[in-house]
Amino acid sequence: MNDTYYEFGTAGERWDRAQLFFEAKEYLTAARILRGLVAEHPEQTAQRLLLARAYYHSAQLSRAETELRAVLERDPVEHYAQLMLGRTLERQGRAAEAAPHLRLAAAMSGDTPA
Image 1 (cartoon, rainbow, N blue to C red):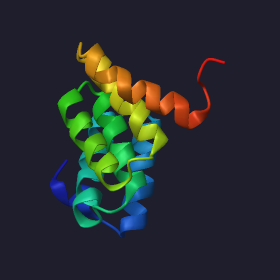
Image 2: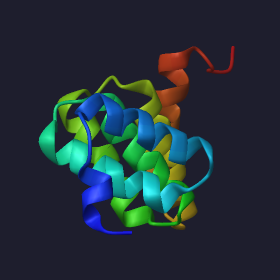
Image 3: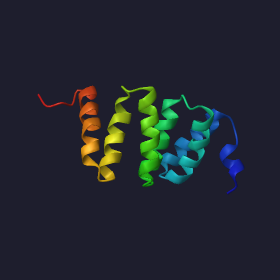
């Protein structure tokens, strides 16, 4: 496929296409579409989170970490980004770094032990 397919259509159409590829577990294709959307609209949290998830599921963990840290830099109380960052760090064998993010995500969601 050539790059124009990934750039074709409005941002909304590309977002829909990226979601379809993600749901079909075509994570690399979803990421390719989402990279363009994030570059055009870096302030959009949903696009960046889906890009991070696509990277996570395609084992591009350092890229997932980069996107998640960018989300948290803009919005430190984004619960799902905290959880995903913790899981991404765990998957990289960095449990000590992951622990604070996982604890914070649990506290934000109310999943703390009584």
